Length: 180
Image 1 (cartoon, one colour):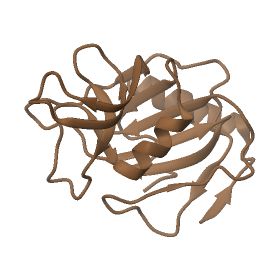
Image 2 (cartoon, rainbow, N blue to C red):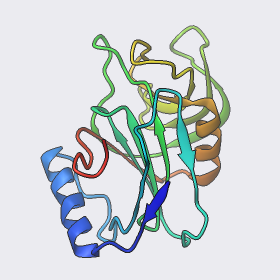
Image 3 (cartoon, helix red, strand yellow):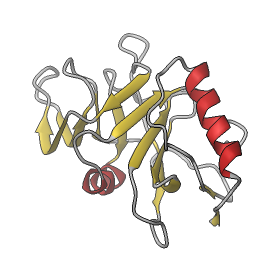
């Protein structure tokens, strides 16, 4: 892993704004500048993730879930600190695009809609059943009922670093020129 930091902030701000505009989601924050990303030596496979916050300054955490890439990117203070593969909703119940605040956190949650299914480290995005939670992330053949299912260890780490109100951007084609 080679960390690429301190890129030209104006360039990343323009890319960030363009991605939000293309996805028809509202801007997250005026200061949501992407300042650095992690360059991996290969794409992540299903179930893989990384988390490295060493030498990353304190700051606001923003989560981006790219539905086309099945990848989640976690930024703190504009610097990428985590990335993970995920599974998402099926054609029958797709994962909605948008910008969501985390509404609720529950480390030991069970679904009240889907047969008491375990949803460890649940981060609720909508009151009608869309959340981020730990799941078996084995291949793109697995799906949720609209949620974002993360590898359980990554879900546990993420859970510790976010709070109610943390912004989550669910989009398509996030930074295709930077990430695979």
